[in-house]
Length: 497
Ligand code: TNX
Image (cartoon, rainbow, N blue to C red; front, side):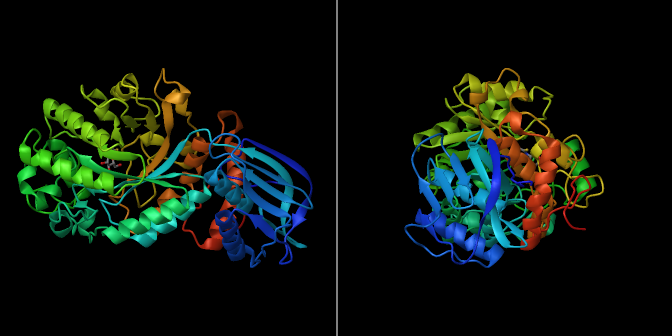
């Protein structure tokens, strides 16, 4: 019997027989986990398990073992889930939900003993809500899917040339004047304080950390619509003209909304008092609005910023973030900045086999006591087409990224010389230049996010492509039941036509 678990647990030992689920079977244990299991189980099976203190299904935290770990022991008479902490208990609940199977006698859990813990502490997805804006409901539904795959970080890219997406009291004109536009001329949008609170609450209830990003000093054209005194005029290069010729959207004009796909043309005016005040306001307020330990400051593709200004900006903003008791994260280019704050986390977005010194830049973080989040673009940039025929997506990261490429890479082999413990974790990324709807998100994210989740969670030795495809096919039967618009690509032995 296939246990159909994605990501694959550390160890799975199948026993004999199964535990039969009926409405008469009771449950006990941690209230949050019991409620989650009951709600999801009900949706799937129609069953509701009553509470009873001597119940055969027991969910508890014993404080033992690695962070986020759990042990699940099922036989014909009992279901015992024991976890080190609340996050581990939730992971165990999701394992239970993936395990439940229909038989002729009704719903059962197979007899099994599972020991499980994550390989990496940080297992995330980045969603770009700047190129296209997605409202809170879409984000909440995505968070649910992430939790099922045992992901625990949602990184929101909240600002870019096309729009600013978080309302700030300190800088009200960002919401008023910089948020109305989006790529392809679509409508923009902006999260209010209340919206932001809903996202944080939904994430917290799923043990997911939200990492907000304001991208500076480049990717800041929209800021100029609200506070023109802090923005430089766009730098138009031949590359930008080529992008405009290929994808449309025209060339950027200072003070006008930008709807194209170009990058690297905008910059804040670094070293000026007005800009420092702006940076202080937005990152201070962001720190106050963020319960988690990290703030992402961007730092990528700042081609419109001089080298000196770039280094100064990275030093200024990472110091600012650190002074608010948050750990800064920056895209890997910032590893070159001389006065990068110690301990800054780098996010590597080069290729699985680095080119153009991307790995060298990433090593700059390690030299200053930081660690890396790995987002190799030709493996886990989910905005890359999954096949040449895909209408959605881009191809700059070594052409299309089929499922196999999202799965078949090894984190310690990307940046040579790195030690396992210097890798904070893995993040898949969905940039949204071409992604306009929730349906588009689902098609690009699934099933490739399941591959990224397994790379992030499962031990190197327990991963196998053939096994993954089988388990993914099982998982997808649950996606079918929920109406998820995942891509039914050819490689996978999907369970129904
Ligand atoms: C590169 S990766 C970017 C984004 C684009 C993306 C499109 C990175 C740090 N920057 O600005 O949206 O490519 O794939």
